[in-house]
Amino acid sequence: MVRRVLLLAVAVLSLTIQVRAATVRATVAGGGTSGTGDRTVTITPAVNDLFVVFCAVNVNTNTAPTMTDDNGSGAYARVTTAQWNTSANTMSVFVRTALMTNTTSTIITCATGSNTSGELVVFAISSMSRVGAGAILQSAVQANQASSTTPAPTFSASVLTANLTLGAVANATNPATLTPPTSWTEDATAGDVGQATPTLGLESVSRNSGFTGTTITWGSTSASAFADIIVELDTSAAPLAGRRRFVTR
Figure 1 (spheres, helix red, strand yellow):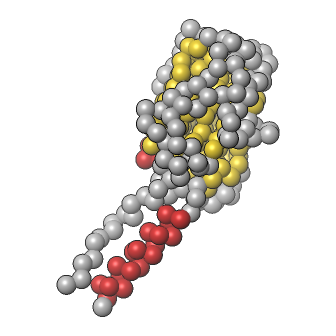
Figure 2 (spheres, helix red, strand yellow):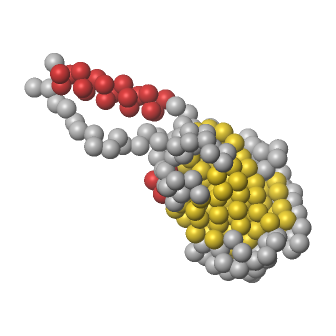
Figure 3 (cartoon, helix red, strand yellow):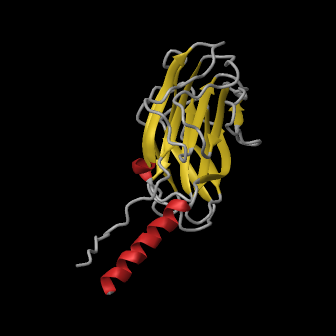
């Protein structure tokens, strides 16, 4: 009888986790042109947020940047990078390795090495149970793309309809001034941003669910050379740590 109750409890808990749909709760931009050091963005989290952060910097060829924050276990996994303007500039995307445990204002730092300007956009995702690299099902990039062409990065496999997708385009236009893909959302404040001296743009989009294709095509061309990155988050329930299988006999 006890084993049956435990099995039922595990099943109910798993169902509870699976029915929560991951959504973008907030999008915040940061960065700057002062000095040549690391670039930051500040966000106030909600408990259990997962942060996914895009970073773009000018005059920087480092393809192994790192990211941290000042809120507890502020570790991040680098997902991928892409370069533009004949590999003179670099963009990257990171995912936090733990959910947020408080609502304390948090400074996120992208350590790229020397750069002349930088822009960051952080997506706060709610109702995720997977974290770090395990939260990313797949990613894709386009690097060193010419101006007057349309960003259209392609995943290697079709996206699962329940999964959340994010994308960003970095270019040399302030702001980036791109039309988002049909059915994707560009945040009114943080979705199309940039720096003036030297010029840098970063346009970002999100879609909570419903995409089942492979190619995400923006609605306009980029006025300057660009790179782009897209990611698919795995919104399925993470395995429960230490779970045992209870078998009735």
